[in-house]
Amino acid sequence: MVTKEIIILNEQGFHVRPAQLFVDKANEFHSDLKVRSENGEEADGKSMLDLMTLGLEKGARVTLEVSGPDEQECLQSLAELIESKFGEA
Image (cartoon, rainbow, N blue to C red; front, side, top):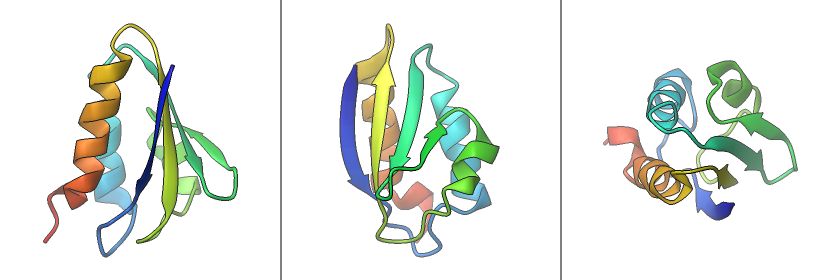
């Protein structure tokens, strides 16, 4: 299992579009993925509905927890997606 704490940087936070991009990317991998918010709430990183219930806004700290055969690649890819602000200006 690998983990990484990361900050949501895009202005609108984790709204529908970024959540969909995140889920699409997460589903490219075989590993299991959990997203944990600062307040301890946890979501399945491959479920858009689960992610949306976290209500993540700009500046929110989340922990990505990945376990499985391609965990390193999955974690790196998702961290890069978040750090790129999901392609938003």
